[in-house]
Image 1 (cartoon, rainbow, N blue to C red):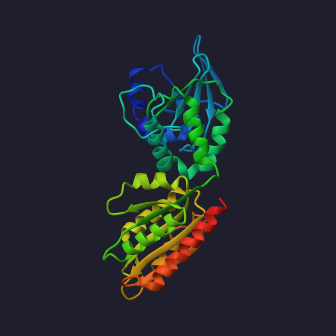
Image 2 (image 1 turned 45 degrees about the vertical axis):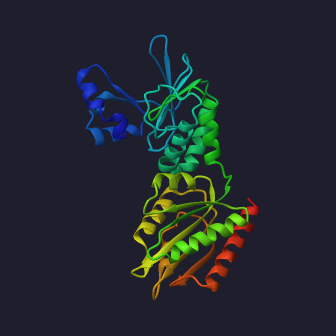
Image 3 (image 1 turned 120 degrees about the horizontal axis):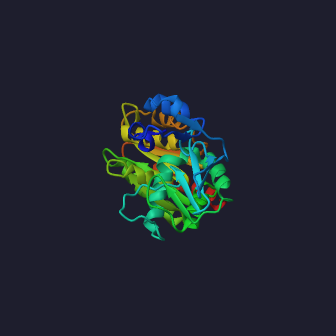
Length: 312
């Protein structure tokens, strides 16, 4: 029922007065509410129900919350095609009909997963298991090219939704007068020396979608912020809010940054991430430029992250 899929339905029904819309039961009220469809022209189908079209058969499977509550996929067994709706889509525009084995399509699919599907990871897990037994050689999503090597996208999704974490720390940060950047650079080097991979995102220039992609697999997030009006910088506030909304499978977190005369940045940031079930490994906030004690605290944070990642 989402408008990017269903927006043209009123025009189609006007052109073809005998046509009806086939949808899941949860989609029916949404189609009426969002598009003003006539209830008499909507037919709902049960999970697993089939529709014979004369030599072709459509079988419908309810796959809720990938990513709307009414989503369903459609299997065309005679042609071995799975029409997956939003599920397994990719954020890529191309004139190529088929994905082939182009790795850029999987990268675009990871971005799509990160930005759209990651908050519904448990639902994605269940729906992957639901479609796995079906026989299909093609997956035709609503976004991006058709997958003609289906195992690639299925395996990628199974990895993204798994509980496995990478030895990666994501650091979204911004710096006003250089102090926070000094701390981020020091921590990055300290983690690298300890064998931990770091992905930094300077928030005044970063592509926020790439930040979301990095959060798919990372074990730890360290947020770097200067203090603005006692709290975190607005860009850090926005990035933290995004991370909380996307609900990545992070296990650990840290907060570092600076302030001029006083700060509540740590307390305010902690209050922004109730959806992240993380263990906070440390916070380091320095007054003005970082000093020897601050760098020692960053080394201790790097040690704590290394030790936690060693057990992943």
